[in-house]
Amino acid sequence: ACCSCCCCPRAPMKEDNARFCLLAGLILLYLLCGAAIFSALEHPFELRARLLWKQQLDNFTRRYRVNLGALHTLLRQYEEANGAGIRVDTLRPRWDFSGAFYFVGTVVSTIGFGMTTPATIAGKIFLIFYGLIGCAATILFFNLFLERIITMLAYIMRWCHERRLRCAGVGVVSSREESSGEEDSLEGWKPSVYYVMLILGIASVVIACSASTLYSSMENWSYVDSLYFCFVAFSTIGFGDLVSSQRQQYESQEAYRFGNCLFILMGVCCIYSLFNVISIVIKQTLNWILGKRQLAHFRPKHGSVETVCDSETDAGAVAEVQVGRRLSGEMISVNEFMASNKVSLALLQKQLSETAHQGPRQSYSHQNGFSGGVGALGIMNNRLQETSVDR
Image (cartoon, rainbow, N blue to C red; front, side):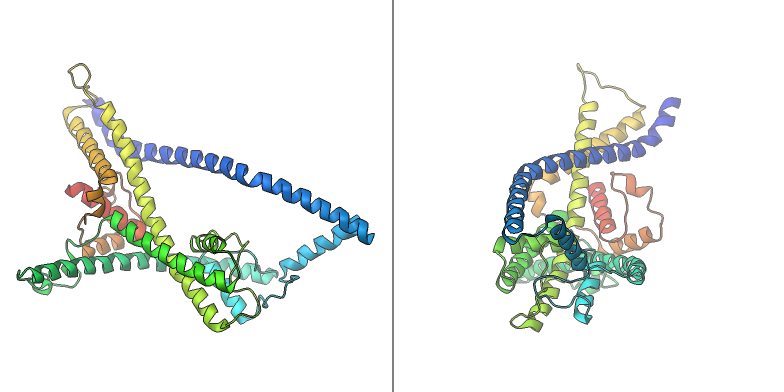
């Protein structure tokens, strides 16, 4: 019994460590597989491009009798000039007001295309402090955007329910009479995490397809290249190989630049929120895997139950296994995918505030393996842990 008292309180810590190691291993495996696939796809093309460039360079030097070393020096000088915004193609100035505004937008949104970068020491130092405040504020904006999406879905679900009751002839009691405030009127109408993920996924696809139609016509890109640019920009990866609104002149130039900024803003908001929700589903999957392992560990052998700790600990372990079963059901059940697991908005906002101020919810946050967080991650973690306790 003494041993069980010493070991059992460490169970949440061990579970967190197991989840962390499992996620690290899966990410490492994911990176290795991705590296192998991209190497197989892109390396042959790189070799062909190198060979073609060597042939073109040899033909040029022989035809015009140019010294190869002098040509290499000129090309290196051009690369340096390109870093300052000078290119062979006629492009708009990079550091006029509109170009600078486009640049700071890519900074605070963490896109960072890389084709426009500060060249002066003062500009680089200022960027450090400017990006520190700007990126933090923008991330907060994205988190609040996800919170508003959840609130909007709760309003829509409640409105649809009341409308169905009215059509059925059932009297609907006003939510204001049932509760003391507007926040309490959304009690029980919070959507499932899967429902939020579905809505954000559909919105992201619609925005990306609409933006790709615009880019393919204005930038003369193929539609696939336009979709590729939308994902790279909206996900804030920002390679910089394709960048919109860089030519000096466009048809309907002002309208296009406004639409470009609007699409990027909406796309980044939706994709960032979608990433937050998907991260919760990934965490739920890790809990499901750990629950399967615990289920196998506590499975009876030869008609007897394996004793690991005292009876109180066994009860806790069985409860954790039941949570794992519930999570498994949530992952594979279509009905659960479309069902609405109701959680109070007022309680979510209170939990968000307490988490931001390191409130008294730390012990509760480990009951089902969901840790806290600030912003959208904290909202979804608290929602998932409460639904797992309620059920």
